[in-house]
Length: 443
Image (cartoon, rainbow, N blue to C red; front, top):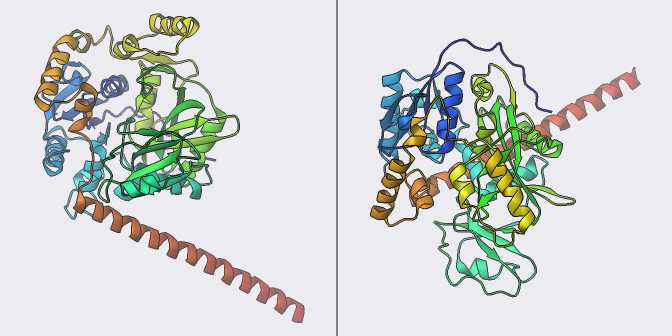
């Protein structure tokens, strides 16, 4: 079982850098860090974003978009680290993978100034958790149930899937936020064309119907130091959750503990999407970064203390927050009157993540920010959700994929060698024990 040995609450003020400043989790965490006495800085490719107007943020640095220029983004982060004398970098979204890759051995550049400050696992571990096929294999090794999965590298691979026997979810191996997910059902035609090829692999997984939950944790040395769980209740398009209420769930806690036990020495954030049926609990996705679970500590410094290992943080059951614009956009065709009334009760009785009397400007600037965002959408010919993530996304190209595959193959060989060495050590100990028993008998 994972446990933690807290240090005394630190009174030292750290300079903390958030890897983007545009998301609700970014401003929420910035406020929590300020409550804990830290100085908060952000970097972001956008000139205008919500954290730029927050009095919880000391300074915002505009940097190149990592999706287009990963080296430029990394250099921008380095300059911010040097300028603000940063002690800790907390990753917020997929820019994490750009930073981890640029500071890994695979890259070959000397970026230790960033690597030792980045609160995240190494690049190899991140890939194991982010790649959906590798993650399923990791779950099984950790003793956790995983969904049945099939790797698809072409339309021919998709055509031979057992979609006539079961419902399947077809999605990119390196996907995010339910983007490009196809629901394959028996006796229904397959999609005409899926953007799948050896450089854009997809994974098909059994479609599991049940109650959905999300967990968020902070790990120190492979031990859970902060933990929260919330059910997926109110969503936009059945994907993005906009209402968060902390609950206790012993089975999910035990599941995450088994995963943490399989990550010895790992520091960082880790979040999972779960589906629970009458007899199964399955993690279907892992996000090794900040997620909306952070909102369950809104208005307190408790989670911020866990980032500096000052004290553990478990979200209090019943703690709740909402994303008000998302709750107002909520719609569900199958919702009856009772479900609609329960939604309205949550909407009217829950505090918004963004609004704070002590930090009003981010809320007041929302009309200006939306105008700025929609102008970017027009320029890029994108819808708002896609635009908001696009310049941060990590989508490995051919050379990157080859590096990743070599990395995974090398790690797999090292694991096999390690397992073989463990077996040999056990056999030697057994032989030594048998020999000593035989000697005793001869005496």
